Image (cartoon, helix red, strand yellow):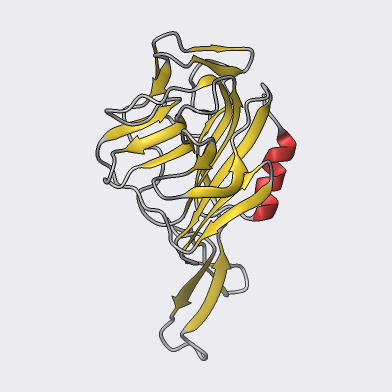
Length: 239
């Protein structure tokens, strides 16, 4: 708190880990009308990690640079994966393990639709673990029991946009495919910091479920992305 040239108090406040509307109460001894309560609006989401794959496996939003395994490679602005033994792994759990979060990525699938395939994962089975991909039935999924209704995985060789939004305030989990909301589940999917750290292109241990194809523009947020924000990311396309 500082005093300006007119003798009036000015309050400078830096929000902590909260998102959205936050309330603060200011008090001054002997001041008429004290205390005063006001609301400040912080951003609804915070970009924690962003991998455009323009310079290796570099996190341009955070500092969580990963390592490539097998024949995984970064070329032409995307992460290339052979579907056999290639993937990327980090030394920590990048997706938040509490509160609301969102995971956005572009996927080019060149593998068979009748084989379980994972785009991103962390944790362990029953851990609970988090993953996005599709099962042997070709239906997109985000965690066990979260099949995206009427949303089949694509193997047309083109990049498609997939977004998982977990809203702990609304107690909902939402799955978007190419900008369209394909399923809403009335539960906030949770994950914990145990098991396998975050992987791109492979399921957590002991499963494989390797992706044959590519990943691009992987983004991980704290907070729940709005439908409009999902559309904006889709419009930005791949790098």
